[in-house]
Each structure stands twice: as C-alpha cells, then as structure tokens.
Length: 326
Image (tube, rainbow, N blue to C red; front, side, top):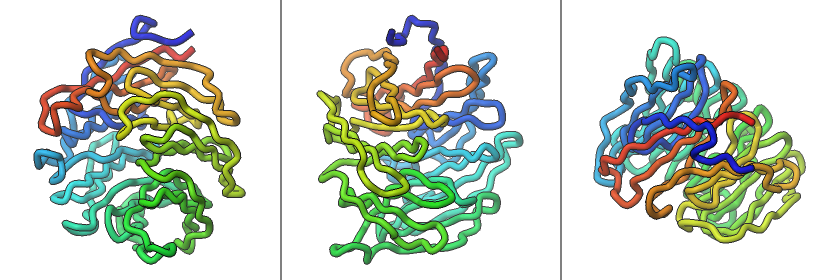
C-alpha cells in the first residue's frame, strides 16, 4: 500500500530549495539550495532549528552563490557551494557548528559535485574536468588531477556519483561512466551509458544504479566487473530536464523519482518497484524540483522543493515530510 500525505506523515517547514538531507550527530540535516544554508531537524520534536547560513545568496540564477550539495561521513557535514563568488567546500562540526572553509578553482572552473570515500573528500569541477582530493578534517588539498585529455574528444565536466575505498565513480559530459582509482587517480574503466541528460546514481551493495534526466531507462552497473547487468525500462516521466532521478536514502536502499509527486523504492538486484511514497503536490508537478530522501531514526524523511517557476529569488519555502518506516 502506498504511503500518502495522510498516512501518518508530519510536515516540517524549512528554507528555500531543500535539495539534500543527511543524518549526523543525532539530527536530521537539510541543505537549502536557494538560501545557501543548512538546518537541523530534531527527530524527537520534528522542529527545525534556525538555519546556519553558509553564504549570502547571490545572483538572479544563483550563479554567484548556491548550496549545490550536502554530504556527511557521520563526523562532519560537508557543504558544496558551486557559485562563482564562493566556489567552496565548508566543513561543519554538527555538535559545535564550528566551520572550516576551502575555496577551489576560479571564476571559470567551479566546484560541481562532491563525494566521500577512501578517507577523502572528492570534489569535481565544472570546467577542465578537475578532481580535487581533500583531507576530511583540515580540507587541505591532497591532490588535483585533470581529466581534460581523457577519451578521444577530451573531457570538460565531471559529475561524481559515488566513492569508496576502491573506486571513485564519475560521469563526464558525454555520459560516460568513469571508474577512477583513488590511489593513482587514473581512469581504469570507461562505460558508455546514455546519449543525453544529467546523471544521478545510487550505490547499493556491489552495484551502482544510474539514471539520466530525459532518458526512459535505468541501468545497473556491477561495480566489480564494470558491466551493465540490468536495464529497466521506464514509462512516462515528468519534466525531462529533471527526471528521472535515482538516489539512496543513506542506508543502501535505492529510490527512483520519475515525477515530483512520488518516490519509488526499488529492489536492488532487479530494479522492481517494492514501495511507493506519494508526495503532496499543489498545482503542476513542473513547479517542483526533485526530492531527496533519508532513512533515519525509524522514519523516512523526504524533502519537497516547490517554486520552480519563480526562479532563484522566489520566496517560496520548502518543507520536509516525515513518514513512518513500515
């Protein structure tokens, strides 16, 4: 039976553009893209604390400053600001809120995505296909590697999907999946995936599930052999610039979102839908961005981000829905 808005859910208002959600130091942490802030939700009271502002939002499109990603290793929060004014990674201690900031690149080469693995923070760039490796405590740059000359046509952008002790997985602008050795920082495997779109991924066990916006299929890649072991056809999707999206809830589960009004949990070996969560939508689903999902404290926490039609400066606030874990 699908979980719906009336099935024991709780709504918690947060900032503008809740794009990401993680669990650290006993709390649920939400990253607000448009406010460039993070907020802690107390899982016992369902109350959101005052936001911790990372930077001042800048630019009509957020090009000056925006919160691009929020990840955690359980010890600290790592916030990525992909705007050309900030272009930074901020490390936040979830207990004391103490911060450390590292700025990367320049006004042209901006940080694009972030992943944690091999006792490192990995950050990719929007130009020149750079991969920065940072110390997870000090944020000192351990290495900088350019993949600009990779492949027959070269590479411009890298989008990180996952990282572990044995591999860093990234997708280039040509939608090739790259397996990068974290020790040598060399590409050891290239897998052709899609022809267009923006790729998202979810690691589960020994596999990586990958989707691309505007594409009507999911791919399961065996992370040991590098082979595509399953292709799952998708039906109708929403806004082709956003959906479909595949992600993890932080516990190894795999979730698919083909439109803003629902999330579907997939069986990791087969890609079969085993559960559906309905998301309350007001008006058109095209006015909503993709949700993020987290499994923590015996519940599912789902971000809801309305205001797509209003642009970066729109005042529309988002919220988090807590569903009971069943």
